Image (tube, rainbow, N blue to C red; front, top):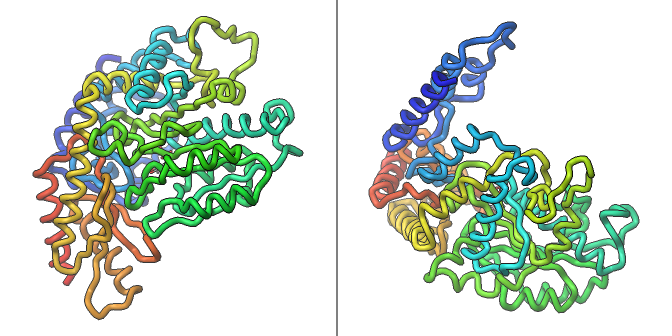
Length: 463
Ligand SMILES: Cc1ncc(COP(=O)(O)O)c(C=O)c1O
């Protein structure tokens, strides 16, 4: 055992030490990785330490350095030191954290970490919560509670009688939603036809008049899903106006705050989330802006009764405890990893002040990158970041929109192949763009300067 662990520590350190200088994006193709990794299933066993050595060697070219400071793809970061170290402990302890009787210490840690997060986000302290694998499963958890809540009001017990024959529910949300909401709703028995697109402004926030029109047009049970920061430019819906309007019409309001909920931790940015605490449920990710290792999402539900009814586990042989919180009563899984332990560590490492600094710093770096790249020839900043998300487009004069879509994709590819930084792409208002997403605790001013220089060099090479 010790040899394998020593090798894992050595390779982990080597990996982390390499982050500052290694190419940011993975270099190996799928075929190359398969050629190395796809060994025949062995007949007999091998030395554990050798397996760890091989793992480190065989994956090196196929790993993205998202834990480093110059990775701006999707909304991904690495792990704070205490969170990563706590995650190692979680694996070493190997506590099955579904029930207190099975995993006493880690279940209590989960309870404390959940209370801390509600406090951090200034959400109702008597709300219930669940640690999930990610925001998509936080949506499933919260929307299962929503489904229970709105059907209960309509006189239907969905846990007893299921969705077949239930009063139909409409889910009002904007086209600007994240795709994980659609998946989450599908898992809960909502077809795509149950989703209604509400109009948005040019910035992507939901239009109140159109929501009012759709609310008035549907007498049955309804759920409204709002955005606390959209993926492209970090636009927030107007919670103060929309939530009371939806609730007055009998709707359950759910908020996707995968990363945007963290704006609440910053004195400078909290106004963007004004009124968000009025909602009925919220979903966010700790593996995004809190910089804990994958996988860790977080769901909060104002009505614990609806939440528990949707999730609780009834089997008597599992002897549920009464005076303590059993995570399995609030979660999709029974057997599960103690994923709240790294959160417990990260919240102590940073404290409220450190989290606010991290959030503000990422937003400042995002603005600096967008402005810095936007000032380069052939680069256009498509937004003035109000959070940590920016968009850049690359254009050649006299080229068609189609040609500039291809040009933008080509520049992204060149930057990622260069290895000096890593970005992912998107389509915004019908045009290709490069996303600038900053969520890493490691990103520094020097990383920002190196990033802009990398883009400048790649643009120059392409022209
Ligand atoms: C706004 C938003 N919602 C939901 C998700 C899904 O989160 P996860 O991948 O943790 O399930 C993401 C992921 O990037 C997101 O940005």
